[in-house]
Amino acid sequence: MSGSQALTSLCSKSHRYSCSSLFPPSILSSSSNPRRRIPRQIRPSTVRMSSSHPASSSAASSTTSSAIDFLTLCHRLKTTKRAGWIRRGVKGPESIADHMYRMGIMALVASDIPGIDRDRCIKMALVHDIAEAIVGDITPSDGVPKSEKSRMEREALDHMCALLGEPSRAKEIHELWMEYEENSSPEANIVKDFDKVEMILQALEYENEQGHDLEEFFQSTAGKFQTEVGKAWAAEIASRRKKNKH
Image (tube, rainbow, N blue to C red):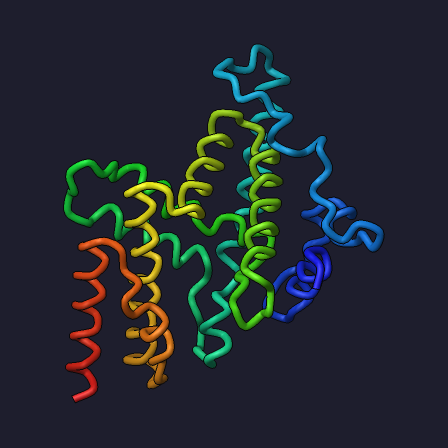
């Protein structure tokens, strides 16, 4: 399945939204070049990442308009439900934004760790799934190869950063997202662990509230935590789950 076909298929599912108003037509239909990317004119590479401020009221108005456009697109993060819970029949499942918000809280309340920039962790948690505002919550069950998923999300991120129009902020979001995606820093290691911790904590809560058996979510994260805080929090969740089953 090509990138454009995969995106169209994902967006046509009942729990996703229409993408037609978000992507240029070339992304959603390109039989001659199914891997066509977002047109160059809207890529963030064409946005000058300078420190200069708008010099005129019209420029300021344009920046404000772009910010509201960006925030309106981010609304999709609040309304798109996490696909794994939907597939397991969870009632009233969390949204992508719900997941990212609690990860941000995790970064806020975690004990200080020498050499770790806590503020950067909070920001990274808040943007790590931001591309899902366009592509949705793609899971292994969707049959999209990992490399293709990454490509689709990077295109979506580029589109969103271009839409934002504020060069310094767009650059920061792009860098945070890439750092997380590539797991390229100690902060990314921690936020990757928070991503897994938040998922199993949510799984435990759904088990307690709705009686589901969500063992697969615990199995999928077993042995994959990279940091001491991640391992400690995951162990505490596992301990509470064990007590609940007795």
